Image 1 (cartoon, rainbow over the protein chains, first blue to last red):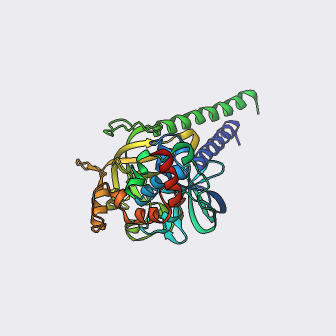
Image 2 (tube, rainbow over the protein chains, first blue to last red):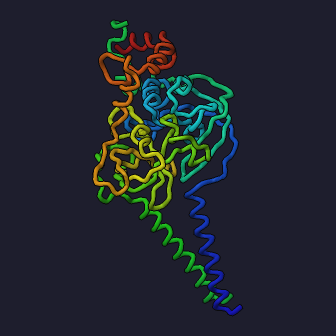
Length: 161
Length: 197
């Protein structure tokens, strides 16, 4: 092979490797079976900052708002202990935006789930095959933040009971 | 390999890397021509682009359903410019309304959208979308992405009364009646009210 052709070949191989790496980083990975432990959260309020800092838009403080968002069809996520969010696409065989009570009943709960994890363009997606443990709500942050947003707890609660 | 050849190879790789980085960062700027309203959200960037509306389960996992699940599935956008799958979290309304109602009429169709990319791309590797306007690709007429409340009213004719939909939603009311506003039961609600109201 002539030296110039060899040089072009090496450069082309380098280019291909660079392109392949960039493409892999941006697109998809193979699905993996995983076990994940984390809190079921409302992804919009957590990611957008619309209600304030992340510590305030989880747990008991944000429970009613999480119900509102889940009922509104906003994607529900699982926030794991490393701070990664997994968008739930399916919950035990049911589509995650199905208008049933199943997705509502686990809002703000700390769950351990088994399922299939996909990554596409930087987003974690999760098909929950089973919830193998549910510790219920374990983050009692309303003691620090009250209800977030404040109008998610009724005014004059005791008087109106 | 001579020093000259090594330098050439290294330089070509560096230039390629720079070119790719530049094209990626440029591809992520879709703000030109956007009419989106600002919301003051985390790292929000106006963003208008052409895309295909997709069923996320189908696109990601190959689990496809008729008409993108008829409202039971989360939907997304595959952007024409870079083939990137974008997760849509929200429609253009202020309250707690998702994007499914507004995207579903365009299932597997080409559209133009306008809205906001939000979220810290350093922390979450990407950003997420709030769709405010949508139209058939190439059409002149934008439609506001605000169908949630109208469609909720159609689905819940029995949920009458004062207040916004989310205070009258039967699924929400059922959970609050069972577990209270903080999810800890009525006793915790009463304690909170006594201490704070």
